[in-house]
Length: 345
Image (cartoon, rainbow, N blue to C red; front, side, top):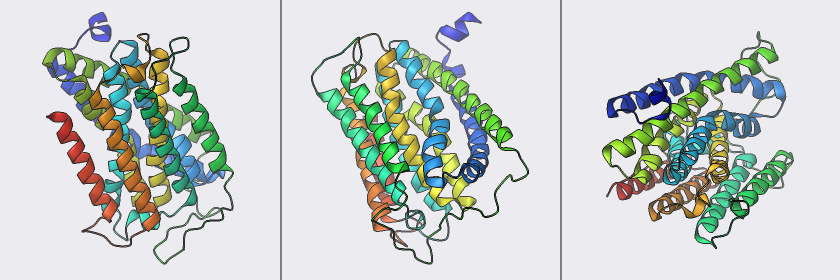
């Protein structure tokens, strides 16, 4: 039993853990969607802010655990790659949700100044991450100064966004725009708020356990197969990391909560950047940002490009695009596929 907890796992067991964690994540993600929509109504925060903060936190818990455990085990490439790989894969989730939303391009329907601001915050955090990795090799108590900057930037951005009730910029409302309707029929109206929060936390804890198991499986795959840590962390772990956001985004658009769907992805991505702060604190080999290889920095650049494309889609608000997707949906698929292909070479 001790070997299963701390030792290397066989390849077959590692693959099985990845599959089981994916199934558990799908089931938990569907449930989190209903709970999140109900709590967004009860708290009065609204879909954009609640989705980006609480939804983002709940769906990012597995990624936080993956990064922390990998860093503590002396696997900085896995830790860093999981965080930025999850951001890239989660951004791709918007294309999946867009395909599931039949009425119009999702980015057109989910027009929200808060979602745009979260997109800007994400670009800033990713840019700071690259600056930390490419900047001077300095640490304070083993932690890079950019970690503190990332936390401060996120907190400041969150305060700015939460205080944006009457922005000077407004999205033009069209017949296809889906707006939030506070005071309307609330989902799970028969449940008490305390019970909703309890279940929300319980489901999130299941996601945490899944994150630990996936990390153990990933480390075993690296040691048993010789696969590069950057590929395993950035692609395999990143995809599992992105499953909660993908599932909740698709489930949200099917329930008509389109703003919540986009907010969950953007908010989850912002929190995933902060995973690097956790990894930097836990990693005892110096700065996590300087322990990575060029392929992790390449993946970070890919996540930055994909985030910019998504923000452009929210600004342009194309009603109909190429096929079932807007131009940004097609570009997101192309950029992600090219990034993965380059990492696999």
